[in-house]
Amino acid sequence: MTSVARAGHLAPYFKATSQVVANGLKPVVAVPTPVDKLVVQTLPKTSTVQSLHGALPIQGLKVKHTTNLPTQVRFAHSDIAYPDFSAYRRKDTLDPKSKAKDNVDTRNSFTYLIAGAGGVAGAYAAKSVVTHFVSSMAAAADVLALAKIEINLAEIPEGKSVTFKWRGKPLFIRHRTAEEISTEKAVPLDQLRDPEPDESRAQDPEWLVVIGVCTHLGCVPIANAGDFGGYYCPCHGSHYDASGRIRKGPAPLNLEIPPYNFVEGGLLVVG
Image 1 (cartoon, rainbow, N blue to C red):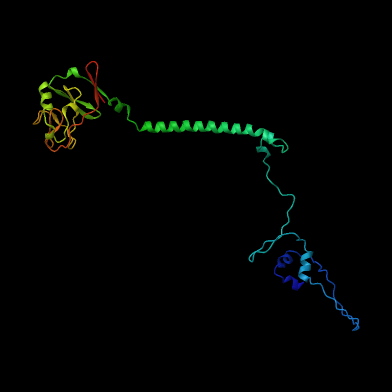
Image 2 (cartoon, helix red, strand yellow):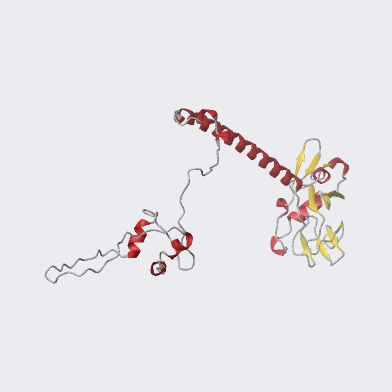
């Protein structure tokens, strides 16, 4: 038993049990035999370790072991508990012998209906969120109210320039005389810093509509002043003519023209 217990691959089994297992071998007894009747018997080649291994109840088992951990052989039992999900299953699918294929189309239709309704609701919610978010960045009601302005042109006499407030900026509306119109149309374009004919700056020759912001540093020019009888910016000495074109001074561009149109009743709508 001592020599067998020293076997490396069987040592864990002898440590785990105290059962004595017979090796199945019989002791050899020396008996005197005549030389002529001497028969040499060959012992079986099966070793003691193999005999004991065959007597152990581990036949047909595959044991995996390493050099660092002891080898263990565990037998399965029939009383292993496993979870039961019957309470979560449909009643028409509890019986394994029933034809489950009959209910596949019904279950798929219900699943598709729920998925489609959820998708539509999610898209509507996303649209509402995006709409409210974009609306929050839009201009306020008081700002939108000033987006357009209506001006009664009958209240502006000929040869005068009236200033209005539009989108937080000064708006110059000038009722030009026939002399001013002929003078501005006769100006050669090669003499202008920002060449632009008078016809393209006034939809109606009698009315000039410009934004009263100097194109140099954003100052407000003075109407009916300057060397050319139009507008003059006293901050840095920029002179504009009666068409709002830069003629002298540091300003690089002409006065800006806002979008506007004439409507019936002698009204001018800017914006």
